[in-house]
Amino acid sequence: MISFSKNEKIFYIDIKEGLICEGKFIESNGNGIWIRLKGDSLNTFVYSDLVEERVFKEYGSAVEGLEAIKNKIKARLSKDDTFIKDLLTKLRKSEGNLYATIICDILNEKINN
Image (cartoon, rainbow, N blue to C red):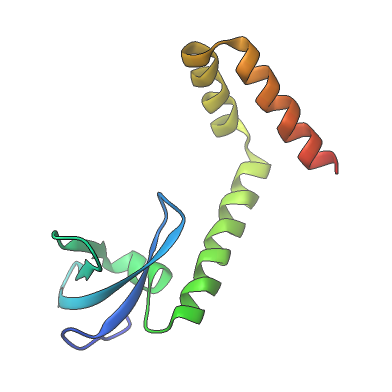
């Protein structure tokens, strides 16, 4: 696992939002590390098996890490489209069939172009 010093500037990949956030390292324990993201009042815990994938010392490395995560997700979704189908089912229930159909058409156009 990468080692950090207390209050060292770090860059964290927020995979929910797809953003790179600046923060500071707080401390490490056997299960992972605690960081504080800039602008947040609460600390964030990163499990040890995710530290190398999501926490970086340099912004450029974080950008490369985010691209690697995006590529893994795209590859997984390309192999198994169950997740996409589930999202479309939820969209049909919440917004109706028209919106779901239009989004399918847009996705198909982007894939075919």
